[in-house]
Length: 247
Ligand code: BJW
Image 1 (cartoon, rainbow, N blue to C red):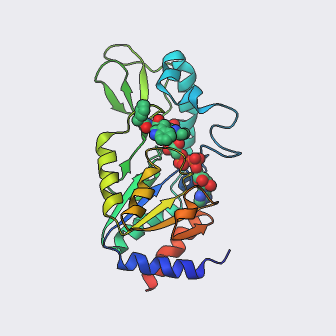
Image 2: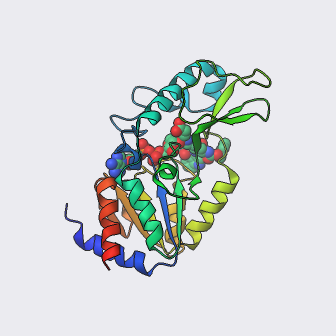
């Protein structure tokens, strides 16, 4: 699809913006080789997310949930940030103000060089005890089949946000403020199906921001977008930033 006119318009919006907020989802890491959550080749393929991504699932079968997260850690250890992640680092340097909010737990934005990333759904580099205050950064290292707390012996769990759990209040507060205050909000590689993360795009739009979507395919957000670019983040984001740099 020829997005040239839309990319020109977007580059002008970015140049003129005082503050740009980007929200990313699993789609931005897909070109690094990490599976997304939904869709035909998604992480949840063949299994109900509530079997692995809820506190109830963990309480019922911690070993099974850790099997899933150890698989995720093995995948995360194999991959590198891609052109989409790097383009956002460049974008942050080219606009007046920039806030990056991610739903991803893979830390690829930070590895690409993005600073001060707001993580709505936690990360898989850290674990914490379900009973005592113990927490530890383990990096992308696979853990034992039954990871236990060295202090109290109870189960460790990944520092991610499962369904029915509250998001980190500070992350929500910062993302909500950026969504309220931004002139341009860019929703990147997310299906927009998971809340409250999905709400920020609508909040930005109702506060007057130009709403931009970059996704392989249309989502529920598309009809609300002022600019919708459908294609790969790893191709579209570098093109947008290059166009901005050329202005
Ligand atoms: C590309 C591409 C390429 C591919 N280029 N694009 C309001 C209404 C309805 C329900 C709720 C509501 N408020 C709360 C809820 C309940 C629930 C919820 O949202 N349910 C919905 C599923 C209906 N939300 C919660 O439970 C949240 N907590 C909460 O609200 O607490 C308050 C509360 C508590 C108790 C009672 C009541 C209220 C917590 C949500 C936690 C989400 N956790 C997960 C797992 C994280 C850990 C892990 O990684 O294992 O987060 S689920 C999963 O979905 C993960 C993701 O961050 C999240 C979003 O997925 P994402 O990133 O959008 O990925 P995909 O796969 O869906 O989409 C990828 C997109 O990329 C696609 O569109 C592709 O086209 C695109 N793409 N390649 C460009 N190369």
